[in-house]
Amino acid sequence: MWPEAIHRELAAARIRLVGYVPDAGHKRLIELCQSDKSMRAVVLSTEEEGIGLAAGAWLGGERSVLLMQSSGVGNVINALGTIKECRFPLVTIVTMRGEEGEFNPWQVPMGQAVKPALEAVGVRCFPVDKPAEVAETFIAAADIAFNSRVSAAVLISQRVIGAKGFGQK
Image 1: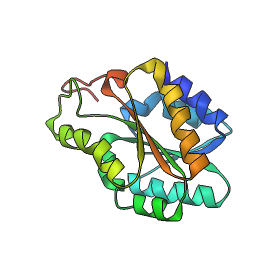
Image 2: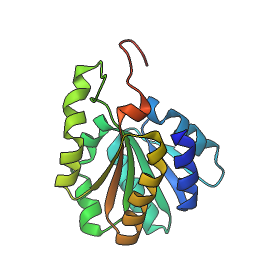
Image 3: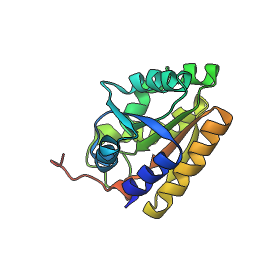
Image 4: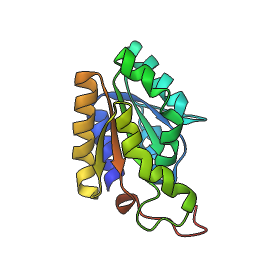
């Protein structure tokens, strides 16, 4: 499954700090990172905290990743200016909502705006809609972020994580 593949690639990329806002789409990946003794999983109150966490990790000589849902992307847009201007690498893995099969109309606007909003502030976006391509897409995003000191986001489609039905958590 894709969470296991991403976890393997996080370890291979020497990522030691994983910031996340709890999210059902990332549930298994979060569990894997929490149980990995070489990683520190840090629960965030809001996605913006993940930008500071990533900057601090880089200044301290460590690599990090930020996990969030597409609805959280709107919360980090302003803070991404810090990453761009200071040339800190940032890798985010975004589980998408508001796509095919979405039951919650409140998720649709941000789901549609994620890629254009991120690109407008200089984030390279790597959409993926096939489970078998998640790991290789992450590798490409991590390579460009850490080698070029830019922001990169892997956008994992609802086709991969599955659409929730009304009343599901």
